[in-house]
Each structure stands twice: as structure tokens, then as C-alpha cells.
Amino acid sequence: MNNDIAHLISRFLVVILLVIFLVSCVEPTPFATVTALPTNPEPSSTAISISTSTLTPIVLNTSTPLSAVTISPTPTVTAIPAKRIPIIEYHDPEFKLNEQVQMTTAWFEDQMTWLASNQYQTLDADELNLYLDGTGSFPHKSVVLTFDVGTARKQIYIDTVLPILKKYKFKAVFFILANDTVVTDDCSKTKLFCWNDFKQWADEGLVTIASHGLYHPDFTKLTAAEIKYELEISRKLLYEKTGRVPKGFAFPFDYTSSAASILTKNAGYQFAVAGNTRNDLASMPNDPDRFKLPRVYPYSNASLYPNLNGFNHPFSEVIETLTRPGEIVSIQELPTTQTEKDGNKVAKVLLAK
Image (cartoon, rainbow, N blue to C red; front, top):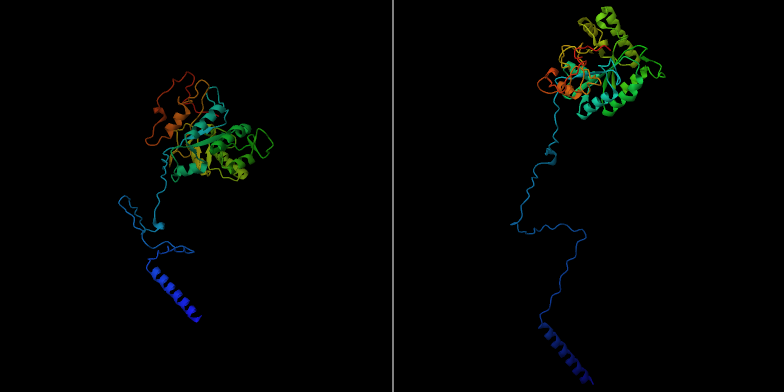
């Protein structure tokens, strides 16, 4: 019995040794090795070789800090400074001196629309004063819109003048006749202007307050004392009623004299306007006629329009000529575009308003 067990064990050991021998004779197939991804992968520091034979290299200059890089601004157009600026005279859009010299609402709107469409800007009294001083520079497409407020026509200003100024962002100088037939403290009156009207329009930046005197006399027929009274009392009254010191004065009827101009300066005004005081109908820096500046008359009549009285040319041509940069061209040098009709020869007529 014991011999049988020993024989079985020996045979089992022989079989095991034989299996081990056979396995050692066969080359084992290796298992694929899987590398686990890290939880927070970092970019490999190993360079990857790429053929650059077909690539155009991009060179980055990293030596210049971003703060030192200069970016060229968008080019801007520098406005040509004005050598002359015309001052245009209005009264109201339905002004009528006579059959030959008048204005209509349609003509007034046409003129304002043309100015806006052609990129003209308007100056207020303070800006005109700077220009006359030679300390303010403005684009050559600049004009001054002036209104001689000498009659009680409040409604047409509210219906037409002010809306057009607002529409085109224009400014105007209002030369106000400071008496109670034109303006009062009572704002309930429909025809008369109210002092608060002028204050409000000035606050809105639409108008600059200036003086047209007290009673609209012909200054060429007054004594020095009478001229002084008109100048000083109207200026004082306008300041008291509006809180603004008038810098400009418009002579009644556009009539003035050397004595009146001197008295106007002595009364504290910074400039004064008249009418056809000279051939060159525009203001200029350091103007020698600062206290009798010329104004352009934009008036016409039914048979002459769109040409203007005294020019025989449309408003557009007159203003373009007066604001043309470069060499100064006289209005008289404008080419004739229409034969002036009989009865319209009013070029030398000084308007009496």
C-alpha cells in the first residue's frame, strides 16, 4: 500500500516537470502596456518634429511690450479756417418791405435747408466776437444768422423760425427792439413777445440776446446824447429782463455814422451790424469795421426769385462766393446767370425797415 502511494507521487512529479519543460520552450506573447491619463494633463515638453519645407514661418516680435505698441488713429479731415464769415440779415419769414424787397416762408425754408445740406455751421454772438478778435477759428463754411426783432410777430417765430433752428441745430442772434410794443412781461399775449420767451430760447442755446435799440430811430439824425440813450438804456433793459449782457447791436434801418459807431463801442458793445456798408459783404478777423459790419440781404421778389435783390444770383451762389477758401472773390465777379428784369435794380438801395 505504501509502495503504491509513493509510486503515484513520483509519477505526478514527473508529469509536472515535463509540463514545466515544455512551457519554457515556447516564447511568450507580451501584453500591451496601457499608460493611464493623468488627472490634470500637462502639455508635453517633447518637441514634435514637423517638416517645414512647405510652411511659411510667422515671426512674432515678443521683445516689444504691448503697452509700447502705437496704434495709428483714424485719419481726420482738418477744416479749412474761414477767412471771411458772412452775416445774414432776416426779420421774419414773411417780411415785406415793398413789392420788390420781401421774404416768404418757403424761401426762408429753402435757404436754411441749403445751408444745412451743404454742411454750413452757424455762429452765435460770442463766437462771432471771438472771430472778430482773431482768437477764434471756425470752418470756412460758417455764417451768422441774425434776426432784427422789431415788430410783434411772435407766432411766426414760434411756428417757423424756432422749429427750423432746432431742426438743423442752428444758432441765431436776435437783435431785440426793447420796448413794450414788441416785448412785455405778460406772456399771455399772443402777438407780443414775452421776456421769458427770449430767456428760454437763450437757455436752449438757440439764440443770443442782442440789442436793436429802444424806438428804432434813424441814428444818422440823432444827437450824440440821443444815440447814447438808445444804446445804453436798451442794453441795461435787456440785461435786467434776460440776465444776459448784449454784446452786439444792430442799427435801426441799417443806418449808422462814424460818431454812432464810436458811441456804440463806448457803450460797452463788442460789435455792431449795419447793412451794405462796403463792397466786401462779410466779416473778417480784426475787422476794421467792427462797429458797422456789413450784412447780406437774402431778400427777393416773385419775379426775381430764386435770385436775390442786388446780386442777381441765387442765395447759394452768393454764400458760396463769400465763404470760398483761398483768394477773396468779390460778389461783383460772379458770372451772370439771369438777366435782371426792369424794376428789380435795387442793388444800391439801402433797406429801410
